[in-house]
Every structure is written in C-alpha cells, then in structure tokens.
Length: 77
Image (cartoon, rainbow, N blue to C red; front, top):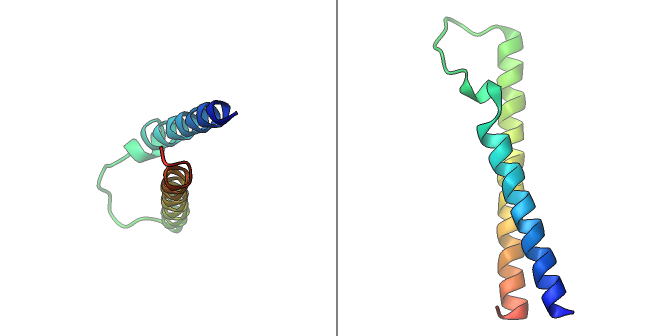
C-alpha cells in the first residue's frame, strides 16, 4: 500500500510539473515582449490579470513544495 501511495504521489507531481511548464513556456502572451508607447487600459487590465495568475502560480508552487516536504518528513523517504 505504501508503494502505491508513493507512485501516485510521484505521478501527481509529474503531472503538476508538466502543467506548470506548459503554462509558463507555451503561453503566446508571454512571448510578446515588444516595447510600445503607453499601454491602453485594456492592456493594463490584461497585465494585471496575468500578474494575478503568476501570483497564483507562485502560491501553487509553494504549496507543492510544502507537500513534498511534509511527504518526505512524514514517510521519511
């Protein structure tokens, strides 16, 4: 039973890592780095939305690190 839990944990960790990498590197909006004049209100709203998504990603990352630490300490892997 313990091995099943470890395998499921690792599968979940790999799936989460794949999601983070796909979100970060395949997003077309992150590739747009041209300098422009002053941004419009719509662009500012979009940037604010993406900042919120990035902060959410940081929270998810920190939570995943916490889960790994708890898993390692509880099961003493």
